[in-house]
Length: 72
Image (cartoon, rainbow, N blue to C red; front, side, top):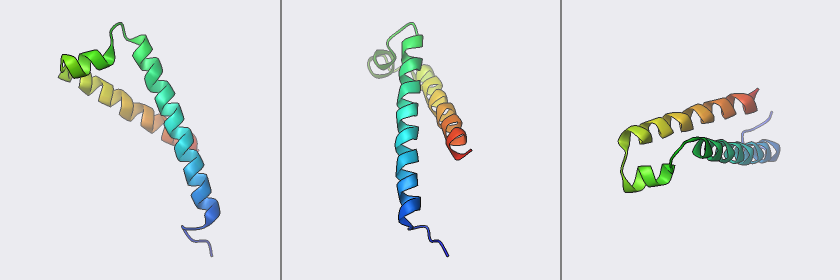
């Protein structure tokens, strides 16, 4: 009987987590490049809460897409 702590499962989880984080970072970088303004300046200096909500929604959507793609 396989357990959750099986080394093969742990290795696969680490690889897929790293892959998901890399794809998420690349997707977020593309989103940042597609916007006509500097996201971090708007979020941090100007404290644009509406933009923060949109960026958060994009982050959740990217995460869901990546999770669905990795899990099959």
